[in-house]
Image: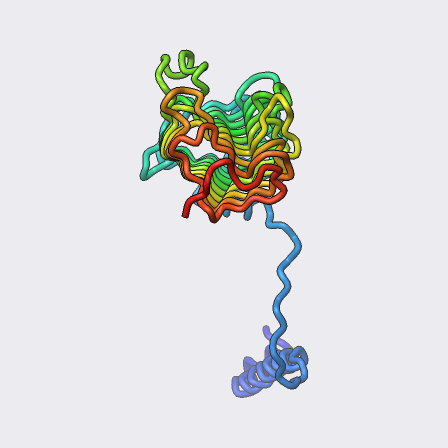
Length: 362
């Protein structure tokens, strides 16, 4: 048996409908009253102020997404990383997390021109070789079409070593605290791009070998590296890198290499030693274009060429560079001059001997 209000509604349907209507009106009225109460008072229209960007850095996941794109594998720990490198196939994107991976990491698989293999992370993704006395922290060992992007390489005898790599990109890495050279392309490594990297604190094991970026092999090493033939690591582009605190040259281009480009790089030679080198850039190959680079603080000259092997160290063009030498030599020293060219749009300041030891052209 139904009693009270429920019974009344059951006996009088019109009463029930009326009460439902009144209840609905009260609820809707309450909602609109709440909305109205939250609206600000109208104010005179003013030009909007610029929104200040946030000072907070992006989260690790945001940074990794920006650096990596479409990730196929995310790795945690050194064993996981090396396993992913071993299993890599064209088109794979291997993402590092914000942690330290200790070891020497080797790539032997190759991507393709259309589907490179990518290893990527942020500056907080640290590959640590565990000793500046031995080992390559990252080794492209006959592996082509790789993109190495965004992470940190530290604490190895050599930072990034590329042997026989073709069409690879080394981009946005932070390479520091290295026993010898920071980044090295050798053993017939061709058509690669080294761009936007920060390289510092090299030569901690041997001053003489502390180059920032090194292309090719010295003639004295051709027997071991290329069977006695010139190391034709050709058509490589080294662009927009920042290199400082190296004990030897910021960029060393060896005899046997041809037709590459050094462009838009920035050097500080303050840490170079007597045993290491006496210029930011030393070109011993042929047909290189050296343009729009800027350097400060060289022990002797800003840029140099040398003929180490007969027929090498010629047809190189220096144009649009800025050499703040702060040293006793030239901005551009070509020894011998051969068919090398220094254009007149190069600039040198605080160079004891002046712009160049040859007549500028153009």
